Image (spheres, helix red, strand yellow):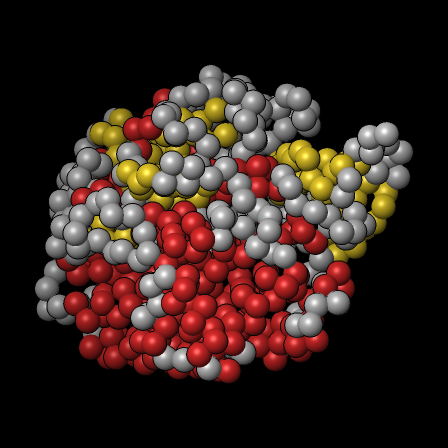
Length: 532
């Protein structure tokens, strides 16, 4: 006799913002179907319509309270490409530095404040690492929880040196930046970086020097490093890896097997006259699409982007490029799992279909030999992906933390390359036109499209990382990336489905806090409790 299907409605599922709901169908203790619902309409595209073209510089950094620099980066580059500006090299470095330090602060904040809390869940009490996990990572009381959350504030002190404040600065503008750091500012920034490295990256996270860790180029190298010294195995990275294997976090969360990155950090000497077409060849961190099924890499072009609205609460045609969208929200957003059930569109690549965005995507693409010879190359995560049999909760989170070390080196590069007496801003000529600005926020692929007509914004469109990842089904019936990643997860306790949280938080689904679980056949509420 076949087991009955049990449905869990988890609302909301994250720890930061309360606008992601997840429904999963469970059969024989395994997730067999899933739906992700974005429950909050923000409407920035509607707000910006008919506004001054530079309104996006002020409005869009407030789309997120923790990655405003990424939105500001996109808004500035979008107008740069629309107005055909010239951007001096100092300004490119200053923009890159602002985004880098914002990403660096997110690493310990997410790791300790959002992700590792789950490793102290009572479901893992039988793990041989559980007692140490609670000691280190229990919220508020864990020794390393306190260290990580406290140190996370340091990198954005550098952002404040550039923009006057963090978050929500608007120091990046078309034609450059509205700052001119002094030698004192640069010296302070070096000191902050060094403190972050010595007191967390090396002392807590790695248990070794950054130089030693960066010698690791393959999965075998990593496993040899792990066993090389007790300090490595007992570092927070070593503990994360060993406990992840022990609790099975390497066994689920695979996803769609195709990955996207816009690439980011324009080279200071190669993108001073920015165009949409010339961006790919000017990036330090290259763009790309990686097909894990065929093991192929290629560059990513914005022209292939489509937004499917069949299952999203919009009254407009689906399957169109963002330049052709109108953003007409449905007045009554009734949840219908067979119909419309989310404010997120289903973002698709016109040729490659569903794509996952995020740090794992970036690292898999960094392992490709496509692109330019000067661009960043790192084979480690791609080698792990192949040897471990694909993506997982464990590998997705590892990729995020691993990337931070390359970002640290790029922050050093920016500080080293500033020429303080050279220009920081070149005044642009405003004009009508279309522009596109893209980057990689810490959570993944982010871009803004703008059309200026008659000196006003005719159309403004944003596709954020979470739009790629938590989007609903598309017209072909295929699930979104996070929906697909939930399939196959084993739920040990349906009244405490921590495994669902693991999958969602491996994507850094920046969402909050109370869980409600219901039995689909009876409607009985199984549990209601806080996850953070």
